[in-house]
Every structure is written in C-alpha cells, then in structure tokens.
Image (cartoon, rainbow, N blue to C red; front, side, top):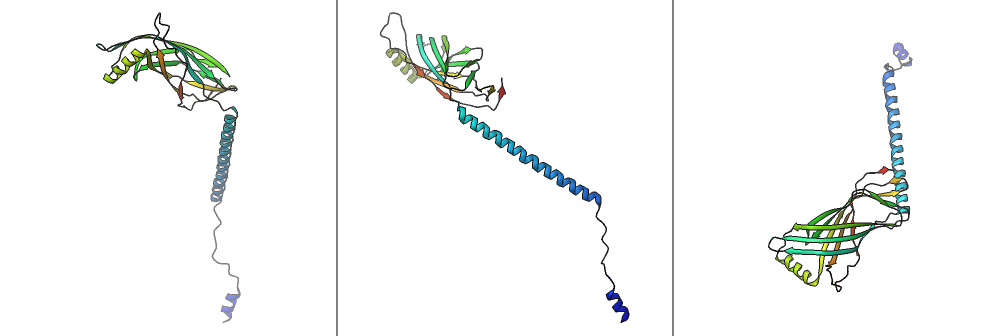
Length: 236
C-alpha cells in the first residue's frame, strides 16, 4: 500500500515529445514571408492599375475628344452613261472634300485614305486621296480632292436599270461613297490607340453639261462616321 502511495505522489510528466524539426520551422516561415510578399505586390499592382484607369477616365472627360467631321463640299459629274447591251458604266466625277477637327485640345492624325464610289450598291471605282499621312490641328479644316474617271463593268437588274433611267431623266444620280482610313487622337505628346472609322456618304449629284445653266446644283453633304478600335498606343 505504501508503494502504491509513493507512486501516486511521484511526479508524472507523460510521454516524452521529440523537439520539432528546425528545418520544417524555417520552411514555414519562408512560405509565410513569400505569401505576404505576393499579397503586397498584388495589392500594389491592383492599386496602380486602378489609379491609371481613373486618371485616364478623368483625362478623357476633361479633353472629351469629338469625332472629326467629313463633308463633300462640291461634286461635279460630267459623264455618267450606262449601256445595257454590255453593262458598261462610263463616268467622270470630281469631288471636293473637307475634314474638320472640332476639338479645342486634341489633334487628329490621319493615315492613308481610300474611297470607293458605288452605284446601286456596286463599286465602280476606288481612288486613293492621299499617299502620306497628315494631321489636322485643333479647330482646323483640311481639304482634299478626288477624281473618279473611267469605265467599269457593273450588272444592274431590271429594277436598277429602271432607277437609272429615272435618274437620267431627272439629271440627278444617287452615288454612294465609302471612305476607309486610320486615325490617331493626339493629346499633347501622347497619341491614343488606332481608330479605323468607316465613312459613308450618300450623294445626290446632278449631271453637269456644257451650255446647261438650268442644271441643279450640288448641295454640301455631311457623311456618317462609324468607329472600329484597335488597342494600340504610341508616343510621338
């Protein structure tokens, strides 16, 4: 009985626990540091992106670039003959065109400009208005000329031939233009991404003939502009 009492009164420390591996502790601390570093870098990157985005939006609303305006200011049609036996259209069309930059703080840079001339939805000629790029400064207007001349095979159905004969009698023809170009918007030394607007013009062009002073006059026509955007940015 005394032996049992002495055993109960003796200190009991339980089973011995081996000390933790120090290399394991170092790996844990290393992983924790990497995680905190990655988290800090991620928050910093997100913050920088948000700041840049907000600054871009603010700058956009401050400058608020407006689209350029394209007008056909004059059109002279001296030949427009269609022969039904061989479906050949003979034509001679001269155009005066204006490009207007209405912005106070923005410069617009234009690349090569091509124009298609169409009748009844069919292209009968393509002309390049300029081979070199140019810019239109703030609140400025740039003028271009284009000439479509020659002959082209086009196929008109009975309804379209009837429309042609009616326009021939009236002396005024419905001719469409499609302009293809690339532009950049300049704000100071920074130039925005490349824009590819499509420009459509619906013209009512009277046929001019020598000695005919009663011919209707062409009225300046504003064209419609539609935008496609590519995400490129560059500096000058």
